[in-house]
Image (cartoon, rainbow, N blue to C red):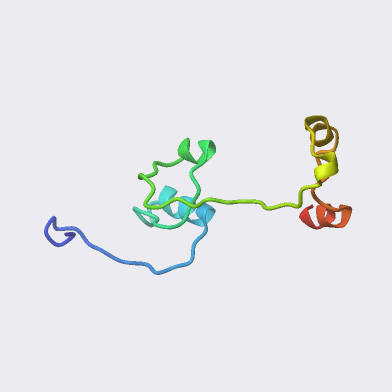
Length: 91
């Protein structure tokens, strides 16, 4: 297609993250970045995104304590599904 319109085409096979792609786009090193980038409000304010080619779903599975699974139990103990050591690992 590039030849048809008299344009040059160079494919770069690289493992760039989102920030690196934005830098390359902003300094006109590349015209397009193709990758698995999440669309966020902040990112949309910086660059244009095409329609997603696929979507991913994320799930979290936790143990349910049937004795203490009422609304107020959850509200009063939001850290309840995880142990203290796991919360430390997240931070």
